[in-house]
Image (cartoon, rainbow, N blue to C red; front, side, top):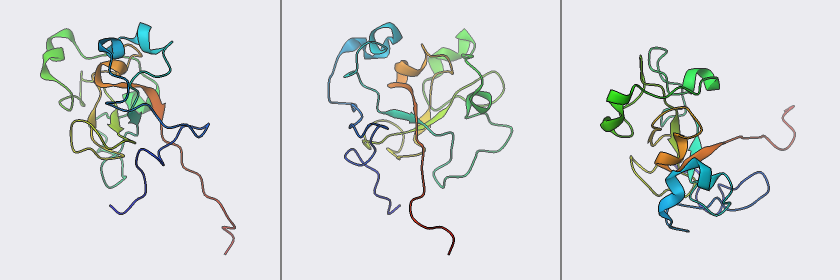
Length: 143
């Protein structure tokens, strides 16, 4: 609450606006083979692994794809459950946020819902490509 992260401020490392949910609609946006070579594909989901208050989830629920080391996807019988249902034993995923504040879940910049898996091909299914937020502190922090 009260932060200044939105479409115009949630920029890439090069200062570019992240293509959002409704910017360049194309049914191929859920296919990794398409989005990996299309810079204007929907990529508005950003990996955070955090709860809305910024804290980590309890250790028995994996919302960081095994501390960002796994490319596992859920068992096929769980694929029909939908986003946000994953996390926990046998259900790998990463919690995401939306820099454009558009989409499912609660629209939070840091904790909206989980992905459908941890593999590179699973991330575009819920409109991401594996980008993550990185914060830096500027100024003199010696005071």
